[in-house]
Image (cartoon, rainbow, N blue to C red):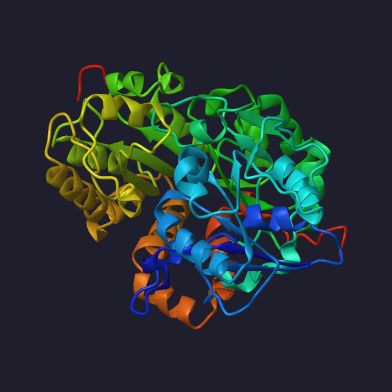
Length: 474
């Protein structure tokens, strides 16, 4: 059987004029995992339109397409193209789960929720000529799941080919979070076994890892065991975690001891009422500055996430947030416009209130205001969002933020990381077009390693297998 698995891309990701580096960061691990369930005699290819031009002239027996909200239009175009040729098309992903009726118009079989278990059922049905129209996952387990078929991935086209996922979902339930809709038919958070996770990590060459888990620290017992197992591997790694998990006794230190050097943290808002309104109670009662201080003292850089447009925000929120981030020497910040994804509690609430303005899914990219904010116009929200990025990443702000570090090594590391990420867009564009993204990886590792001798004594790892003000929470 000939199988083709596709990750479609937004138009801007394939532009002949400008190619942002963010589209060349991580390979499609989900598709590589599905490929691992196929028989050894099956011929399977994975195509990621973010890094290569799709071949649409072929005629495989089966096509699987991963759909997220902003690539939905392109995904449906590809699906319709193959169906007209008589090819059987499967659709899955976040958007398919939240907009099932829409997806059913374009796919022969569609997958609701995580597809690991139901994909096996589908393959058995497909081989016997009786596939179902809808497959709904309610089992929710990663135990015994095969390792992703990384041999099908063009690793050199990604800055971070060693991305890893060892858990699914998140134990928390924020109103604006897309993942809540994805996991609604079963467990919303579950992990691999520690041994399985370490086995996968052990197969990966080089030094750098990036855990793409929504919340790597979500199960403290699992995380502690994983970090203990990774100690001595000589890895440098990045991940995401919630504010609360950073205060779990001993867990952060275990992570640092086995190579954590940069972490994504969802601060989201400096306004306590905003956090309550979005059901992000796990950020309350924790001091933001103290969390940042703990991370910086441990040698960990911070990528802070902030969301603009919550009901407690007015037009002052942009400058106040940027000033706060600079004051606390945050290395990188990711700003978002509050986006009510379909299937979320936020979407349903704004829909009832008559505040939804746009239903063009390509604009649901956290850069456009698709609803009516409470205390500003949609235009003011978008302008403030762009102004926040411009202010935080201008040269004066980068210098001021970096100089908040206590030592020269920290200052230089901060500036190298921030400048490399946000001030070298033209260079990244050239690197992508010359297909040399992989050659930039050693520089990323060098910056993550830092200039402190004690924190940089990590060797290249060879796998065994290969030898507001009131109510603020600040």
